[in-house]
Amino acid sequence: MINIKQCLSWRGLAGIVFLMFLYSCENDIAVVNSITSLNEQTQPTESSKNVEFLYSDSARIKSKLKAPVIDHFVGKKPYYEMPNGMDIVFYDRDHKEQSKLTANYGIGFDTDNRMSTMEAKGNVIVVNVKGDRLNTEHLTWNSVTKKVYTNEFVKITTKTEVIWGNGLEANEDFSEYEIKHVKGTIQVKDASK
Image (cartoon, rainbow, N blue to C red; front, side):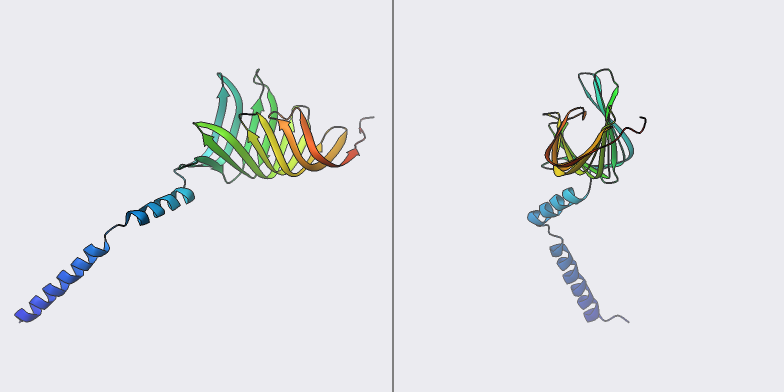
């Protein structure tokens, strides 16, 4: 048999627990905003696999980017991240391949709905149409100046020489380049002679 006093005390206890639950569910807007902004920085808004991305200007394809994964982050400074590497092919006006870039990691910063700068990191290799090969660990491309540059160690291998140094600036198709601080040059003999 249920005692009325027990029933009232259980109802009272249940009421107190319910009120505590409601009180604890109150949201502090500052806490919500901090969680949301933290989540924006660590979680992509979109994530795509096996992506091929074409960049065009005036109805001409300028480059083609392939990546196993591209993550898109939005917020104050939107960006795209290629955490598993990327391959980019740059084309001339006649859609002929001018250079190719590969890297273990890439990140591109979006400004006014266009890629303003892109960074390639980790085992960065660029090969131009002449066969000149650039090896470095970090390279930045600026879409406004149409230049690529780095302050890191670089090694360029051509048909006749190997040049290494610190820092480089080049046009985006890597047909012209300048090593900032040349450390050494080795002449390569032509094996066909």
